[in-house]
Image 1 (cartoon, rainbow, N blue to C red):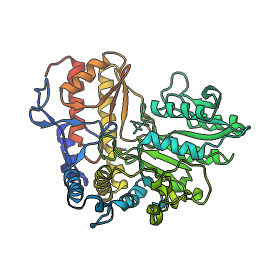
Image 2: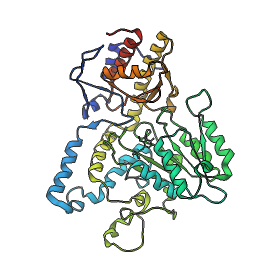
Image 3: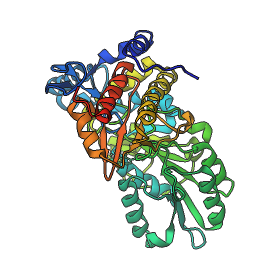
Image 4: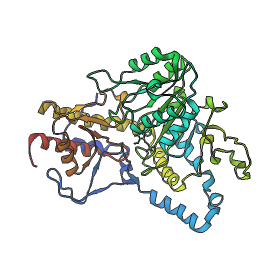
Length: 437
Ligand SMILES: Cc1ncc(COP(=O)(O)O)c(C=O)c1O
């Protein structure tokens, strides 16, 4: 058990010995320009940006990478697809190996493409194959709204009623998070009627990581395919999608993968499905690459995940993605996770100190068990929650607010520091002690 200390000196020491400390300078940290009420003077100081769970920061190298592609466009026009050191035609390939390492997959199992909700529909098209006996889907209640809307409308398109098809697992009364046993039992109860299990791997609101391996293994015993939305998990927690035998997954890259607002999404399709004739919605970019421009009738998919591509990719988005993936290659998921556990553990320690001193004003919804969480802690602040959030913002601490009373703080290991987490504690202390600093 780590012996944390709530002192500036301790936090700075942790930063000095952090093997990943130099990665912070590879990001552009937004600056604070207002005068803070308490703490260190912040004018022209970087914000304490704890919002990588929503939009990751911009890597410094992005601008140059974009300029490079703009120059190719300027100098070569359409020939940019085929010419130069990195022809646009193969751009998705440049991302596959680093992506595969991040999600624990074979390169052929992953492909960057589209945006998350689009990809979820594409995967539902392929993996939701209802029959007269088996048409139900196990999911989690209160999953991210876009996923709920995707499921609801997708089910209607298949001429089923969402209320009859969806089986939602929810936290027990009085609990914030889901129990694996409840998910497994729900699968047992409905096993003979189930066509699919699909849910977030890391819950956006509570920060809980589900036991994806156990859920997949369990559903497979009944021949039920399993897919995960990894928006909050990718680049945040260790994933072994291939070994866990997950059937499919989708994610976005604008959170922990720092690939810019609306950045390109990605899919995983397990290799065991690559030879199957799955139903799919196709487009020309999924057609065999070497014959794509022959413009012939009859769709022939590329092998593996690439065969699910639809449209001409957004090269500028892929260029940004590549820059960020290169940072992950350099840092490595294992060291990032090791730092992440320490950093979020430090935030938890600081919050517990505040709770002890001030009569538990902050409930931490995220599991205390490290293997059940990523870097985000979700705080339920029943009293003066919005006031506290506004105070944090005024002090240059950027988390996010979810109605009615949840503050999400996500210290990310690529660019956040122990000193920043310590500062959160200083602001909380001032808030609850009533001091103006
Ligand atoms: C868990 C989860 N799923 C889906 C989405 C929606 O993704 P997109 O807007 O890229 O389709 C988000 C967006 O934040 C998300 O957090």
